[in-house]
Image 1 (tube, rainbow, N blue to C red):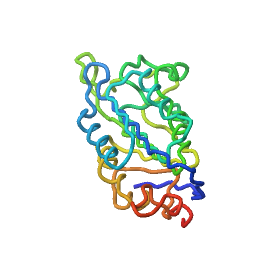
Image 2 (image 1 turned 60 degrees about the vertical axis):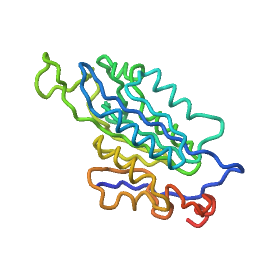
Image 3 (image 1 turned 180 degrees about the vertical axis):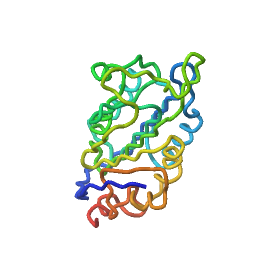
Length: 239
């Protein structure tokens, strides 16, 4: 497991009223001619686990770009959430320093047209950054090959135009945001079983976990979800 750690300051100022925790979970399982990357049931399991942990959850499978942008925009309420989780599974494209999440209906996006067809990962991370007590962006990367009869073995389900490469590229999380990447099954399992553990910091969660990479805010002094008997502002002050 690779950890790239930014110096984190746990100087969170608590708001007078408790804000809610929010999660957006998106899975694209169909690209082109019925290429399946993950089952809708797996997305549902992760959504139910986060909801049980106290998150207000919005989940989608095979959403178009307008639906994705609408769901992301819904996180931008006047009162910023206390904590956020944004989980995206599917295919990604990058230009090196910039990255995009590809919905199923993309049509050979290029560097010039990617913003109109796909969801900017820079925008996703900036939306997550508004969270008062930290945010986690989980990116599950698909590796499925196209199964259409007219494609050669090894071709990806999405053709990319000039200036784009498949994959995530170089991610630079803003302050307060942790980005965790890996294969789709590993990311969904982490969201469903590990991320919801109370009283445990993100570095502790990632110890001994194989197949996941993490970067951004990784403070061992502060748990992502506080224990039930400790107020978030008290834990932040102690850290």
